[in-house]
Every structure is written in structure tokens, then in C-alpha cells.
Image (cartoon, rainbow over all chains, first blue to last red; front, side, top):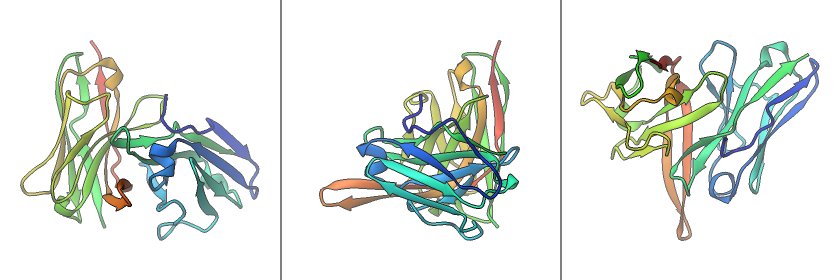
Length: 110
Length: 129
């Protein structure tokens, strides 16, 4: 059971938009910065979003994120087949004194 | 370019020990927070441990505390994870990840910035008799 809650899967057609939610609590999402990670099949995970909303260089602006209270969301617009991957939210939990991840969301581009 | 390469995985019996290594190229581990993260078959990512840059403070997930030890070598090029009393539920691919860990004070409360910005490809540990 993950500390952060994500939907197990989402799907949409190419060109469409999906939103992936990440729900937590005060001691993790609300208090601390949220990050999003993408794991393409057969690849190492990579940082997709940092500081709640910012994109590292090389990440297209089709990827955006937000945070409000104890929840965070990742939006992906203009879906491409190459976006098919597992997406994870992550942050620090002040009460646990450790890192925490969501259970991951598998994106399927139909 | 920063690269991380894990090694040391393999098959080990329950109760046994294993040491994982992560060699870093393109950076010194002195200034970087280094993490171990694992992914069990069919499961999501699970953060395992962190060693901070500079003061080398260590943190562990509850599931491994007292059994696993994170460390760096004195040359600051290799990260280790010493795993003892291994159990079947430790079976996973183990990734090392470089990042940033920064506590900061907001009023009277500490908040935390915990980013994992470069990951290795992982090494697989199987605990089975």
C-alpha cells in the first residue's frame, strides 16, 4: 500500500489530454515539494517535473503539473504513442522521515 | 554527462546478505544526495534509503531499517547498499539515484526538498531458496 494514491491506469487517444492524480496528506504533499517521474518500458525512471510544477530541460511543455493542498496532478496534452509509460509522483514525508512514491499510473495511448 | 551504474545483484537465500554498488561518473558524490529506490516485480517504486551530501546523514524506509546500510567510499565515486537478513519481499530491481535533499525552515517547521534527478538502470536482487 503506497503512501501516495494514484489511479492504476489511464488511457486516451493520440492527441488527447490525460490527467493523473496523486493524493496524499499534510505531512507529505502539502508540506513538501512534489516531483513526477516517468518510466518508459525498459528504461530507467527519469525526472519529469520538479518543484511541484517545473520541467527539466528537454521535457516538452505538453507535460505540466500542479499542486493544491494534499493533492497533485500531472497533465499530459497532445498525447503521443511514445508517452506510454508508468508515471509516479514522489515527495518526502515529514512524519515518516523518508521518501514516498505513489503506486504508479500506467498510461496507455489507444 | 552524469551516469550511474549499479552492480552486485543476484540470487541469495532468505536470511543472507548482499552488497550493491553504484559507480558514479561525471560527478562527485560529496555534494550529492544519493538514494536507493527499488521496484518489486509487478509493483511500483519504493524509496529505500538516502545519504546526504556533505554531512552524510542517512535515512531508511521502515521496511529496511536495521537490516540495510547505505554508505559511500572515501573516494566519493561509489555508493553502496549493504543488505542483511534478506527476505523474499526484498526481491526487486534496485536503482541508485542522484538528487537533492534540502531541509528548510518555514516558521518553526522543517520542510523538505527531495528530488531524484539522475537514475541508474538498476540491478536485480532475487531472494529465494
